[in-house]
Image 1 (cartoon, rainbow, N blue to C red):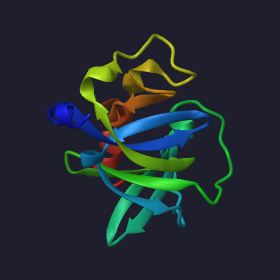
Image 2: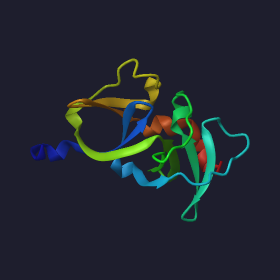
Image 3: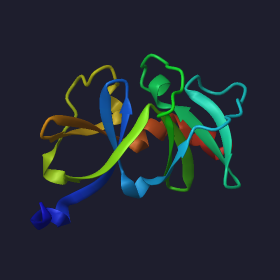
Length: 154
C-alpha cells in the first residue's frame, strides 16, 4: 500500500446504526465524550444544542437524526466528532468512533442511489475495504443548511 501514498486519504471511521462512515482526518478537530449539551430553542430538530468546548461555543448535530435514522440513547461508546470546515466548527454525535485508516482514493466509488437509509446527498462515495464498506460523508452537504445557523451562533 505504501507505493500509493500520494493517493491515500487518512479517514476517521465512525459508526451509526450498523454502518461505518468516514470523514477525512484533516476536517476533524477532535473526538470527545458526550458532555452536557445546552438546548437552543427554535433550531432544526437534528441540532441537539451547543457546548462550550475549550472556550468555543460549538453547535452539536445528532447525525442519526440528520440522516433520518432512529434515535438511540447515548452509551459508553457514544462520541462527539468535532469537525471544522471554512471557519465553522460543529460537533457530530455518533454511536462510536472506530478507528483511523488510510483509504486509497482509487477505491472510493461514487455513491449508489440508495445506501441504507441515509440520503444520498450526504454521501461523497463508498470505499470498499476487504470485508468493510465505508460510506464517505460529504461534509459540505451535511453542513449546508446548518451553515447559517452555525454562523449566527445558533
